[in-house]
Length: 104
Image (cartoon, rainbow, N blue to C red; front, side, top):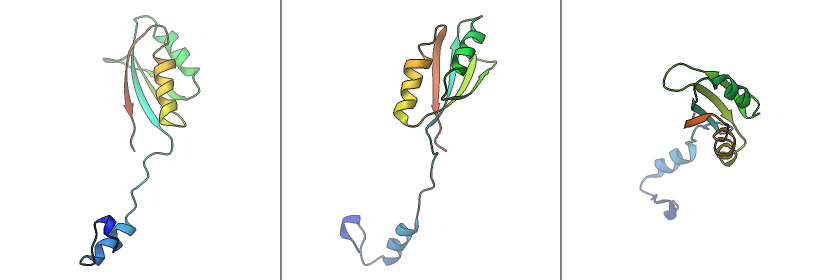
């Protein structure tokens, strides 16, 4: 058994199980859900601007603490971060955001 893996000849079955185990894939493309607080009366205007961003796959007005919920898919985590930071948060009348990254 390879010593650098911390395995020994005393546990040969363990090596076989390690080789057979495969972690299930998470998601193909980074995915996030973002909740937005928007200035009162500006919800429709913000929603229109959000829908113009190609990476935003869904955008909905919602009731509750937040005014809008969006679903974003990007090619990479870096691109996802840039879209949220430099495009969504810069839309006029967006007061705050809460981002949730999907893991499965």
